[in-house]
Length: 273
Image (cartoon, rainbow, N blue to C red; front, side, top):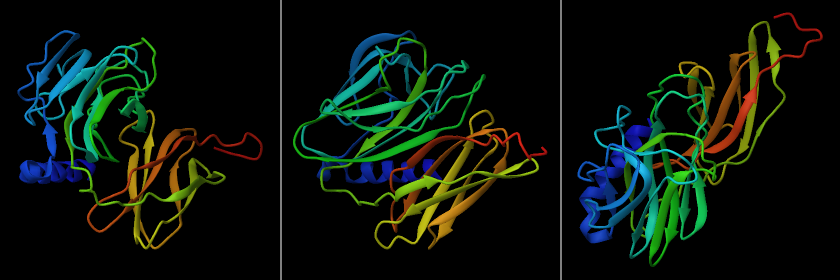
């Protein structure tokens, strides 16, 4: 569903680009190298994109060409929009197979504005594609940098693709839920029950609650709830789950609110698993 939302968003950007200072970058004509390098290219929006210690997507594409970041300390892509930005979106995925968690950050005018969820845990290739859509809503000249979170030198290869942005003011705000909390986990044989609560903002009627097994991508799910402020996730015990919540509005969705990793480790006393 995230992918469909972003592709729809990209289509709108294309159709309205000229009149509303909107843009998109798919890397199809970027001519990125096969080895980690520094360089720049003029994107299809006419803007110049600079990159550091990055390469093409190699064997880990999202959709055609893409850009692969390698380390938090050196890898990035950066560009400047001269006349304001409303909303920014892009897709990302794990590259290569090392069991090191990845996380990306968005830096706008030298300040961190957003981070992705943690992804890429577990040994082996993972083809799951994630989406970040975040509100910027800055006027004037806006410099955007996407990089791996932090400053470490270890490999955390990540591919990004389908970057898109709207003009300042051209933004449909969908407020994220607040006071998102995870309650006490309870157990029944091999199952665990994780209560998640939140406070809705405004009169939004629906929310999505997503859970992802940190070691098994197939053990994941999204629950859509109506007019509620709590849901109980029924999952496996002795497992770690990344949990996040977001609002569904009429024409858009809010940013995710992440609760991090919740471990379903039953107490030793009085438990028979």
